[in-house]
Length: 133
Image (cartoon, rainbow, N blue to C red):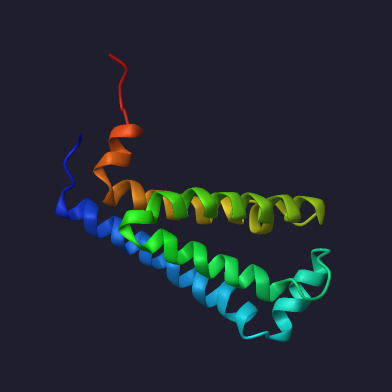
């Protein structure tokens, strides 16, 4: 198992924090506060009215799972499923590739990058190799 340096730990914490703050501020809060923009955005993507609040609750639960160290891996796996569904919705709605469709990939990279840098067990499972022996 590779050791976690202080720089890796803090970089991982920053990435984790940025991911969590973005999810809470840009996605969860508008849905749970039932802001019109959340329902309008969902309608543009083809979702029937009334789903935003439930999706916001699910996102909140997954962010919490991700932030709790004992459940962070489960939270990350489940959040990736949610992000994959968001990506599929963007594809179906024929949204722009780099700004909309791939945005879930960008979020996933932040999420997994933060967890990978913080967790030596995850690094042992998925090592980063620069050369092949």
